[in-house]
Length: 307
Picture (cartoon, rainbow, N blue to C red):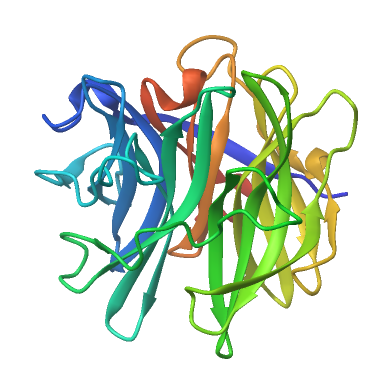
């Protein structure tokens, strides 16, 4: 099996140098290619109350460590008190369709018997991403009889021939108050808002030591669906899978040559990868220790590196 050899380029967006509206973290990078080498990286930063808000940084892919601009304020803030997203919002995926930007995001709620509830939400921008408004004030992946937990979230969405296709994180159970168990499932939609969920599991656990499969990122290349995702036993690592139809997947975690560093900001965990092609090169933005506490890192696939 040929390995994807990834070269780490370092921490490119540092939480300590982030915009004034946040005090820590740059979590779950979500990339939109704007024009030429310009990319917008949506992320969530935490406020003084440790609540996540969504903003962005624009970078030139010739040197992503040099930020062109940060959003002066969050593009999506907290939902009203009592809603599913009143304690935090985190970006998950962005889709451009018919002049609008569809931002799929994670809404955070504090729990009582469990530490949190997570649900997928949808907001739309009609001002080129400067601000987003919620399409609905309820989760787009709410509880159903086959998925009874408030833990259906982190959607990755591709639109193909009029069909909206989603890969998302789905809760199975809570092992204890602080430890949920979740895998990755598949859904379809005609409009990107109302989703048909049939309980199809795409990526499942490979051992009893795993309890979390998170943040799917799907690309389709040469007729093959390729997914990067995070898997966790003690700490997160980045995994990889392939599929011919986007529904039945084969895990190939050993095919990705990327692990934690010996020291530094990503020495304990690596997770929440967003992989995309830019200028004939495959790039990855990802988080490290403590779920992006220090910022966002960058890696390049050596097999596709220019020169």
